[in-house]
Length: 87
Ligand SMILES: [Zn+2]
Image (tube, rainbow, N blue to C red; front, side, top):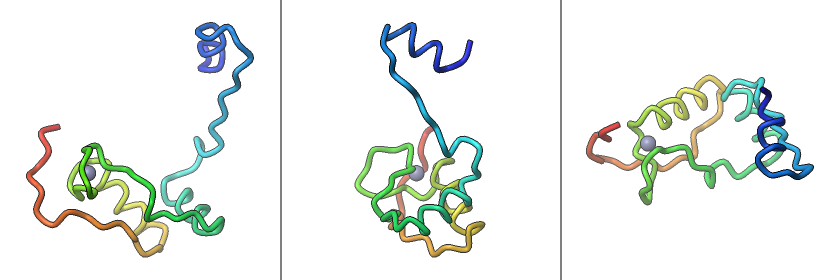
């Protein structure tokens, strides 16, 4: 069953789910965001709920890699010496 059908059944509404970025890589999303003037420094990727991105979890590593692949300077402030996440 497609996601849209599940949502419709669950809510009994005409709610529509759109995910225009689903077929793009993270690097492509970053390039598009830069083109649109998105304040990327305000976006969040880290799995941990802290003041700063940990810079070490899988999501932070993917974020760093995507900025590198996009050729865009990463505006993210990463924590300097956070303990390694348990996940
Ligand atoms: Zn992280």
